[in-house]
Length: 225
Image 1 (cartoon, rainbow, N blue to C red):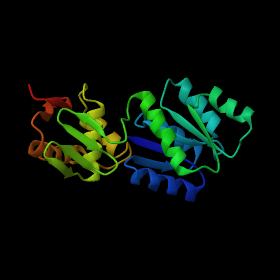
Image 2: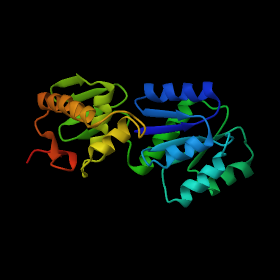
Image 3: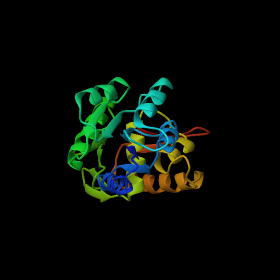
């Protein structure tokens, strides 16, 4: 899952980014409202953690713009404002949740998980399953009947993305944007290399899960027929 943090307090923003990454998420951090809006409108994020008070464009204006453009990405609004009227304003303008500063990071992570469950994109804490495999995203483990296989972070992120979209064909461009970011220098070769690595690991442990190539389109996770 890819999460965007839009927060102008750099220490807090960078700390949140590191916590999210250690929790198994892909996390990007930006420090002002204009960059935040541009990143959100890229459409690659599953959850956004958005500060209210930002330079260049505040969180409420971002919410209005994002919702007006039809984006339904879940957004958690962070703010030092704690009055009920402020909470109502945030929710009425499109926030899905509200967290007043200071907050405990464990509560933020719980709220992210809750929003993910609402979207159907996060499974139980013990992992997500498909066929005869289970992926533990937090510990980067591929579990199977014969035991456990370690994955690299990028392999785990790729498998998670394929599992979450198991009924769809993902293009190389979609995978690059999701795993590396829309402004990354990663190219199709990066995707091919990690698909190759992941296929080899799946072949060594799974009896029925494969990554199929849809020629000219992309890749999809499926069960052997």
